[in-house]
Image (tube, rainbow, N blue to C red; front, side, top):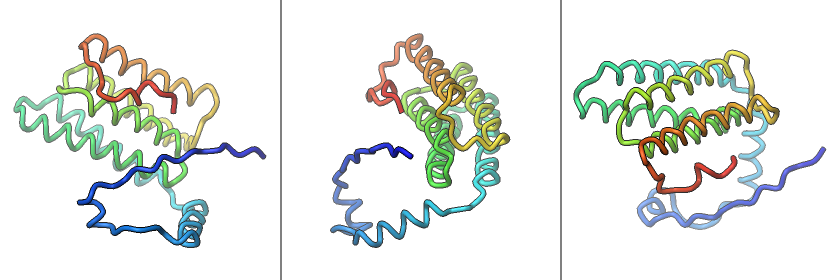
Length: 177
């Protein structure tokens, strides 16, 4: 069995975060115990994710009906929070495909100003894709299907950026996950 080598980036936390979590190194034994708990985790992610995903769908519907700019901004913020939660939980509970798709959608939402019909159509496609993945319990897909999902979501986002002449501030979107 081959194992992929993953290189870690070290980010220095700003002082206000250091004040919240402390400074210094973690005991390697603590890290290993935590990793073992994560690896052996048998929590059923699907009910949690399904609830979050339904809230995401409700936010898409609310955004289509909303007219007040402040309300739309609040909806966009909530959609972003839901995507962040899904992305994080998916990684923790062994659904890396959902996490990778979440990273793409999060990047997209962070780089659009308005929740116009095209943005909401892309969000709806994301919702449908994740709903299918959860229904079929596809944890990861290194095969063609998973790569196709990622490529199509990136492509839709990229076409939107190009049409709207949006140049994302970060080039992480274009890096393969």
